Length: 557
Ligand code: GLN
Image (cartoon, rainbow, N blue to C red; front, side, top):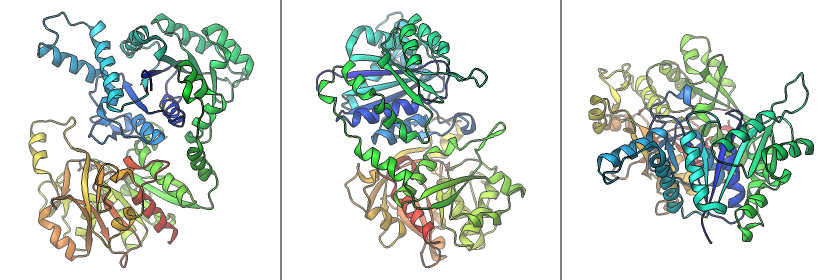
């Protein structure tokens, strides 16, 4: 490999048209050319990370192996490119300023006057370079959040300009634009893209490639028009119509030659040839399913104004899909709001129509009573159940209340005064909360977990290629999964829970923390909860073993 290459992906016209998926797909098609690729996301907000943000507002918090709480696009990168990323791959305005200010306090600028320009973009550049170094990447893709022309991301565009000036042909700029098709006009309009291109020129950047998102494929006339007014060749305008599935995007990009164009522009002459076979195989498996399974996700972060969104649970949703495809099924996923179960608006008995029920992670009191009702229903009616994080903690509470008869069993999070705190606060967390230290202070990221043979969990991992033990000793007994929680199963009650029939099939290597709880298959076809978040390690080409075991159990229902 010669020199390292950089691709900046910026958004024109409007947000929400798939910059993250476009960046991920660029990663996929470059990886298919034998290149080592990494991807970075720059979020323009002041929050240092995504950890403290309200899920309904921000969407999912994606946790990296090193514990960084990031944007859901990082999940897309990891899934599309099948890589593990680090906190150096994620930055926000807050994070960059925080570092610069800390450096200034530590006299690292040696008495110099520290200024927004150039010191902030220089810090951005140094992070991009360090992330590329860490990944030993041939190509680093840098997605700049927000839209061209807004105030917030201008400093990041300045970083791109400085890098382009310094590294010239080793840097390219891709603008993802949008061509609206007003129904009354009946044709795609290029003008907003022209304005976006000029605004980009105004900050000293020229797009090398424009990816034109639209409802329909772009015709030659519009490619020519964009080319003429945005100073690029028509062949460098890529048509990116709406697609049925996000996983079609890499294949579509290749259809318009994007991989070849990028390789040529960056001087990657030995990487013109591509092999997207395994990706295409996955896409075709998603198309050729032989039946459906119905899964209910019972959560509470669905409401967005008058709309119902599954965004907060995106990794869970994708993880279900991958395992379902692997088993030749299409997963029909429906959202049930636990607040509606609580209020009686949703009758818990209606859940009988699902092949499987999943309670994902969550926080706080609202909707908990509804979730507990759902878990009891799944247990008693023997409907396959997968509980993740809060979904596992509540599973333990439900068991304690209804099997052990401890009616007041609870979690410290809801009722610290309860007599049976089967879920308690982790000792180090108490101090953090006392000091109102909420940011990046949970138990976060990858931790090892020891599996006990003869359990559902052990068998699930035993014959899979899960990335969960890529990092560890490749032992099927020791896995590594990502966490995000403050509370844990209270060691005080473990023996009694075990005596009552709950099986702890995964524990931390020192035996202190319960990582996986399940019921014996004699008692229930699949009733399993994990303190960690398996969804963060589910990949299209490598579905997660626990999700796969869950899906398989729904087929037997
Ligand atoms: N609220 C619980 C805790 O902090 C569960 C967190 C989660 O589901 N991610 O322990």
